[in-house]
Length: 239
Image (tube, rainbow, N blue to C red; front, side):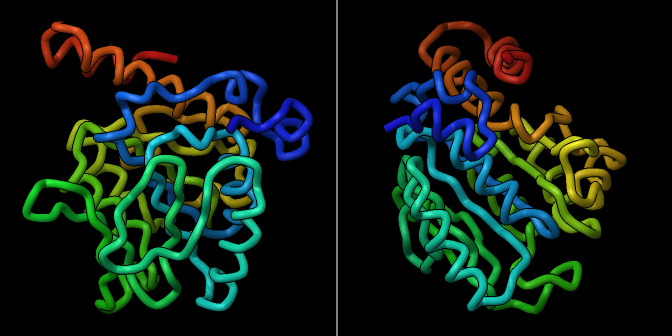
């Protein structure tokens, strides 16, 4: 169910986002990948509060210790929007559900032998000094979901996620970076902007609405007969 107007106001989500629902056709293909660090817990809470349970599967990498991440997942799961839990290997991304990378592994999106999305946890060394790493997650989403993904890089110190977001953009995904004014630290999103990885720079209060409009636009395009290049332009431009 969608959050109420009072809940939207409480958690800082825009009324535009709360008024939108996701097109059911978009659920089978699309993935939303979110990365954050410093200031991320509050930003993620505000973003998820604006997304309905009908939204595409969500993958989250937040720089945090394992015990803190487990508590963070429990807190987020109390929101009146998506279901939230710590990711496990072999899990299937589901609409209206957010999976958070555990503190001791990189969260990666793969495809099984039937071509369906499946979660893998990679216990490889840190990437960009971080375990879990946003770059590792974004790179896997670029490879597995391509143009059917939306990458969101939120507030955080350093540059983790910038290169991965660029890989997502090159794969045809819509890539969004939080703006400086609403970021606690404009390090990670700022690095993405400088690298040319961000399709758009979006205030946190408008992020959920932008995601939902993009998902619905993509579903509309996929039902049409327009050429692929025109369809992609419609997907990226819709707001």
